[in-house]
Image 1: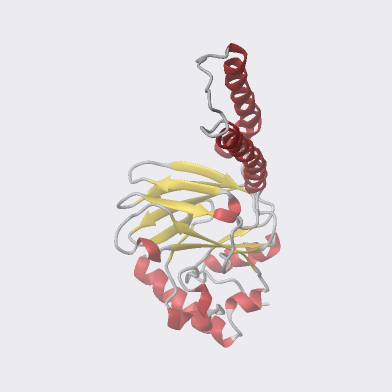
Image 2: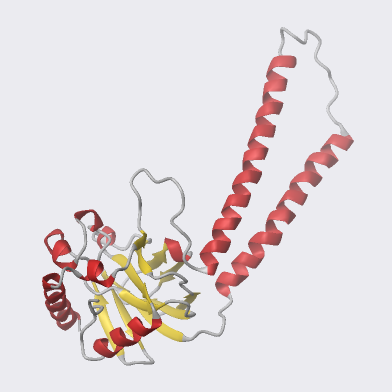
Length: 276
C-alpha cells in the first residue's frame, strides 16, 4: 500500500502543481504552524485546546505571583537579616501560626488549580459521542491513515524540498508538509484510534491540544473538534529511530461540503483536495 499511495500522491501533487498548487488553490490558511521567534502557543483550533490555553494562562499568572512573592521574601531576608544589619540573630526555631499558614495557603492554591485542571483533563480523556472515526498508525517513518467507515486508507509521508513548490507550499514548510495530509470536516467531533506498527511513536497536533502515544499492539484514543478551516501541522513526539524528525503530521480542516467532495475522490485513490 505504501508504494501505491506514494505513486498516487506524487501524481496528484504534480497535477495540482499545474493548477497553481494545492495549498494556494484550496484557499486554506496555515494556522497551526510554528512562527519564527514565536514564544507563545499555537492558536487554539478546538474546544480542548482553548481550555488548555486558558488553564495555561491562569497558572502562568499564579506562578508569576508566587515567584514575585518568594523573591520579595528573599530580598527582605537578605537586606534586613544579614549579619551587618542584624548583629544579634533570633534563636527561635518554630512559629506555629506561620507554619499553619504556609501549609494551608499552598493547599488552597492547589485545590483552586485542580478545580480547573481536572475538568480540562476529563474533557480530553472522556470520549464524547463522535461523528466519525479515523485510525492512525505510526510507522518508521511515516503515518498511515484509515477512514474505516468509508473504506479509505493511505500513507502520509514527508515532502522533500524539491516537491514543495509543485504542491503549493513554501520552502519554509519543509519538515512540516506531507504528500497526503489528513483531511477532516470542520465542526465535527472526530474520534482518533492510534497504534504503532513497529516501535512507539506519538501523534501530536499542538493547535488541537492533542497528543497520544502510538504503541504497537495497543489501541489508544483521543478526540478533537476543529472549529476553523485551515492547515495544521504536528510532529511525532516520541523518539522512534534515526528518521524521527522526518515524520510530520499535517491536518487540513475544510468545510463539510468540501470534505464530501474530497472523500468521493479519495475512494477512487485521489487523496488531494480539489482546486477551487
